[in-house]
Image (cartoon, rainbow, N blue to C red; front, side, top):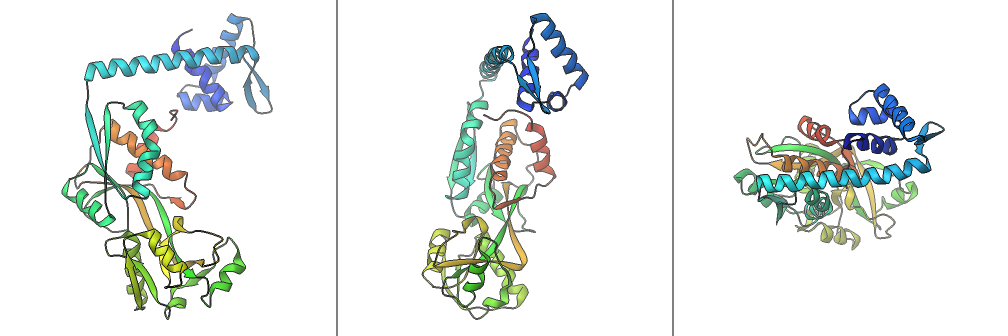
Length: 326
């Protein structure tokens, strides 16, 4: 038996299927069938048994799988050590990030990234959305985790998700009863329903503000604007205090509050999420691509986001999909 054999066994355990393991390993199912049968004959014991449609390890199989995990781990650690000694790479990736989404995402993906690229330093440069985009356009950061609106220019984009913009409305508003009657399902209304209401909004340069401006221009509305802030948490609090209606990202909703209700807007509007790159930046290092992959995976776990990968993002996902991400 060799290390590749151990990887075969671990893939079968992970997928519970010879055909699925074959796809993961990029080998044919007959090849795996012959491999398992030959190994079982050599050891004189069955390694897997079938439970319904799934293959599960026998007691003997579990013993071998435990050893296989240790062998594969030693191989990966050895390869990484040799790679570090050979290349002696000491580099860093400077990431522009908002204090909320961006920095939290970097913290989320850092452990997996560091295990694969321990010699690459991730440096976070925090700022407001407008500043971050300016840093990207000037090449002052290697990339940025940010939101943007469709048609926005001045940088290359690895698009990951889109997020609906919803209306946050004070709980005493005349339309609040409609939202409470629907429970968790957001009622969908025309933005003109709030034409006579005061609005609180994000400061210029924020993506949610850009969506707000686009909606108001398209609908020909000029509502009374009573408050602006760069802080989304402050904005939501102002809605709860009855200062006015706000347009916010869906992920910022705080359900089951008495002081705030939420509505979808018809037609629906979205802001987009992704990794922004300096203009003309077409080539990425393996470390940068892996960072982008981890960000995509992280965004896919958020139920408020809707998948919206562009070609570049899909290529990165395909490159690393199927690998175990610790």
